[in-house]
Image (cartoon, rainbow, N blue to C red; front, side):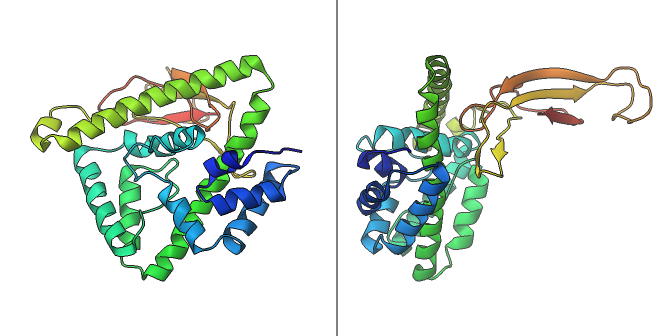
Length: 286
């Protein structure tokens, strides 16, 4: 049975009401029990002020968390926004900032979306789609998105306790997280500078900040990232333009790289950072 402190639940959801109610309802036998309790508390016991408090605890998409945020929340927020930051260009980032400002002016709170694994273009498209909503409708949608974020963070909170039982695993996890944080910090710094400079100067810098092919593996049965999955990236280089199964051929699949997914279900670098990938039959083997 797992028991956590109020500040740990506050890192999962920035509502003080929510954190206090979770402590009252604990301990939990499993993360599934914790998620079920969290949904009941969030939708039935936390009031409007609690919802708004949780919304305000999130940084705007494309911006760094406030120094006042709990350390765990700040780290999780960086990871959740990593795909958006990695896929952002100067123009899409500026457009996202502009639409965020319009959204907040209309609704009174920041645009909230579960950004994990989503590109800047996808987030921007959803923002534009939701902008015409009536405030009462959008408020409910934002609350649903907050719950998605809370569920992901509860999974991470519970899994962190399991990982801490093994020093070797803990060291590996810390190393992966540190590498991810460093990468996101570099990306965030680059985007901050380009947003402050003219578009002409920024366009001279390559927008590619990560390999063009990455993976994000999810365990759909658990509704959580899948860690420890071996991933191998291969490219077809046979005499035929594509593999012809059941027929002999000269050549075959050539390994480009391999890795194991981390706690967030993401693999390491499978190929070099290049601006263009030649068309072909590329497959991931799990």
